[in-house]
Length: 314
Image 1 (tube, rainbow, N blue to C red):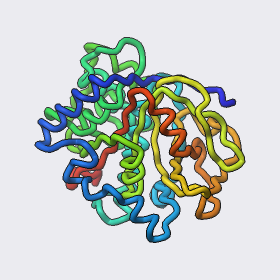
Image 2 (image 1 turned 90 degrees about the vertical axis):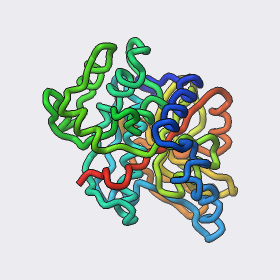
Image 3 (image 1 turned 45 degrees about the vertical axis):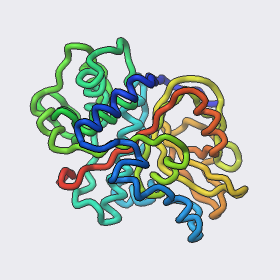
Image 4 (image 1 turned 135 degrees about the vertical axis):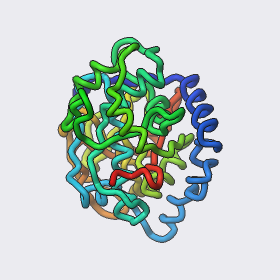
């Protein structure tokens, strides 16, 4: 059994509903994946690809054409920001490689997502560590002229040139403020945020080459001989979904990316699926759609973010 690290995810249906309303009011249309005009046409994409013989869509393959995929090593309750970061980074790099984005493959910083979602969106409602998936989605959408994302660098007193979880935690309490130089940069790069309501939409989103950040209260254990993990314990956590594939028995499976370093979970990293075998990146594991359904018995969230056209990192 894997030894799990810190968590840091709050899952509350009121926060989800609030974020949907705010994003809809700001953008003029629903943020729901199957309704949003930016993504409604993607519904059914996974079944369409399977009908053409596609057995897997693995976002890290095109990601690694831009830079090596290095797993996060979370030590504080920053999982929400890390899950959204990895999902957005995968969506962005895949857009670059498919020619649907005109930016450059810069590395996005996760730290402002954590601080901004807690302070500016959450209004300091959470004490201690942790955030809410819906708050992070709202922050990345840049509603009300506040939020967005930035590449790694130095912005005023914020040194985000490399992983700086200490800065993220130190600047995430009620009353804290992000340096104006950083806020200005963030507001130039915002996202379209979409909420996914079921596993079919998650599969369609990944099949459309958009990463997903998902939050629930189930933790998965070590990989088995097929590279698959099963529910192991309880704990509210958020991480990225970066792959969808056809299992050998015909079911759909998903590839998740953990934020607790390269050795969680343990076990064989070769995923065996209908298309053969593929080596999973460090920190990844496969999960069947049945295990997803078990993890979704209570309230859960899944969000996807796309960089807005014209707001790429240039």
